[in-house]
Length: 408
Image 1 (cartoon, rainbow, N blue to C red):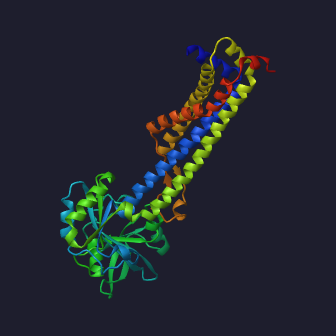
Image 2 (tube, rainbow, N blue to C red):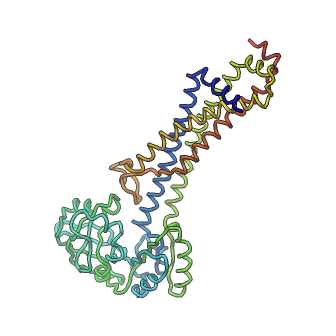
Image 3 (cartoon, rainbow, N blue to C red):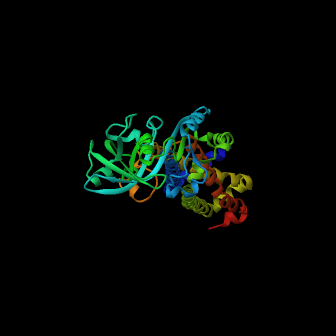
């Protein structure tokens, strides 16, 4: 085996240019595949985390029938005695936060200008680690004090609003009447998500209930869990425990089914691109090994005449390909791993990214770095290299020593 390994290494060194081109092609293909994989995994994880944090939580509870009309934001389909339901949910194991909310359309008037936006009434304490609370750019987050609101910096710029200004909020109550309250702009937030920064006004749940005349009610309860892996198990427990309370239980997978279906399609498309890159690298190996076979027919005949068996001839060419795969794999995983590590920390920023899709994502995207993935793709490069050499090795082993020695 050692002798065959030495012969294989010397054969590759005899044509340094061709061998270098081949292992560089393997390495470059591996770098591209690693970057594709790393960014797909990183963006998917980032999107999932942001979607859960900004939009749905891990689990949402609504009154029966609300989910079917959710786009209309019906206020007459609400969770009654929300305080009692919240306390019961907090007793369940695995809960990180239980946040009652009210979503409603509201008209914001500055006196000189009015605009319709999405109103979001939240429990300030329950959402102190939420997307808005952690992105306050000016002023302060909501406290227990009534009469304050938060708006996005982009919306504030559009309306010419600054910190401390008074706003009049007008909305239709759950019974169809018109009501209005005055609030002070207590803080401005910049989340990086256009659908938040451009069109959402946040106020305390108590103020939202006062505006909409929904005392003790909420349109949804958002649950954040200790781990996303617990979602299905806890959702089933809630379904059983609150079966008689007239509540619907929806997980983040159900609430984002359409979006995650699009992500799956994108993953499949990127997998096809990766397979094309791998195929190109494999064809390069096949080409190199076939050229090597045809150039060395007389040499193969000499080796057979000296007693080398067809199996050893096949093994010799497979070893040559394995060496190329190892060299290319080392180059690919080293360069690709370094790039992935860098991009997992620094990321890539697209300042206008959020304007091109209506998804809860920021403007900086990070790759996912994993030692396990590097090891897996290194072995994958080896496997592709060996498989690509099977046909050339078979062709070499089928040569007849007498005819091979006469080959010109």
